[in-house]
Image (cartoon, rainbow, N blue to C red; front, side, top):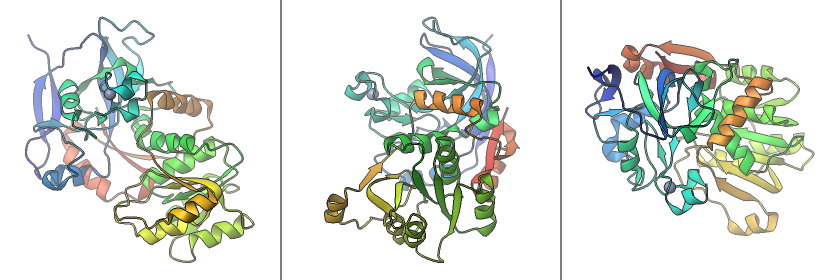
Length: 370
Ligand SMILES: [Zn+2]
């Protein structure tokens, strides 16, 4: 008899998710089957599932009915015939949802995040090849079980809960950005939008990586205070809208500026904020955009050249970086106990989407738990 499982599926644009009973996936040779324990509910998810026709044309969405759920963690229950490494049933894992095709030029040079068919499992894709990847891996985190390529697994030590692991997508995005900026211990960093879901992860990673000072902007005084309390010696909160961020940073660094800027502000943030933060960057400093500010940024090429400042785009992270984060969390340098989990059962997935809309900044972690 075919084994069955439950999954929340989107059948029609703009309609709620529906709980369906569907066959359990078959495991292919290089895949594993994971019993999902927790899956993150991404703040942007409602925007995606209600705006299919107006979504970015270069970023394909899965055909309906689709199982969403980007950041999933759980227990391996079955391994494919060609899985010989140290992954076995019973292992606790996070699945890096950044899927690649394995055969394009980028994949063949092991540069998987630059795969021409790079695809977020249970979310959206980045290239024309993404639809095929969705067909290969159609089971997002809002299902009881999913299949994952063994190469995308991060093994989780017992010290990391499944709910915490469901936050790895945001954490990893910040970690990879700091690495791309060649951030070193003892340096200073400015996190623009530090109280948000992405920004809080950036603050935590900068602290874990040995930042001397972490300047973090935000609007909500209570959240800024909470951020400051994470490490009162190193976290410097900056209230947006009071004084220019660049002035505060320059004053605090003796006119030098910060070594690294992580831009994490969301789609509707004013471009002036981005430019203001960029002015706080030192000569030779690197800014990395991991946020979603939608409007064009007026940056003059001449000062960029003269001051040797860079603006880098960064999307997601590698499985290797995910494994490093797990090690940092296990060692206690990366603090994951700051999140306030709001857990919903699969049947309440639509309520979970409402909860994300009402969340109080990045500390709230809305997850579907199975
Ligand atoms: Zn590829």
